[in-house]
Length: 260
Image (cartoon, rainbow, N blue to C red):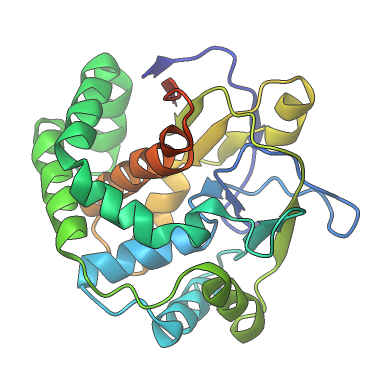
């Protein structure tokens, strides 16, 4: 994981409808083009992190209550599907498998994140310091985050049921993505109020996953998660998601880059 100068950046805010980390272009035939921040499953990201952090049941009531809390705090909310299957969000459809992957590959994930920190020490340490986190505690934070995820046994809803709950109970906009997955790399973006220009890069044949860590941490904090835990869980779940959606599908692991 290292800085990649090819990252095409555009401005955004957390008040806009968030997008998933998915690298596919958006179908704009029904919805206008969105340039909101990118998180795992869009609004699903802070919801599941906060549930794990508090060891709360991730069920319809929790999802609805905390989506409403995000809206009251002024954040845009959204989920997504695609043109292929009813639940076209890989994070939403495979949430249970992603949590299990953390248990199955915990040491591998921790080693990967340790290398990420070593390779990007300056930019990551500045980011952590600005959040009030001691950079020297990074490895301790991610191990504690992984332990908390592996011990979490209260996932009650995922897939189409989760998507429907967001759309019907909280009227979350549902963005429509089009085409096949052709991601060539994955990014972690640390720079506030910026995101990856997914659509233009996809048009140029340079699809990429992108996690706007700054946005995920901000929204997790509103739901009562400490900054350190939000960083750790977000990175762990991002790596586990890549393993499930890319490597478990028989593809090569994606190179991971930091933008900050």
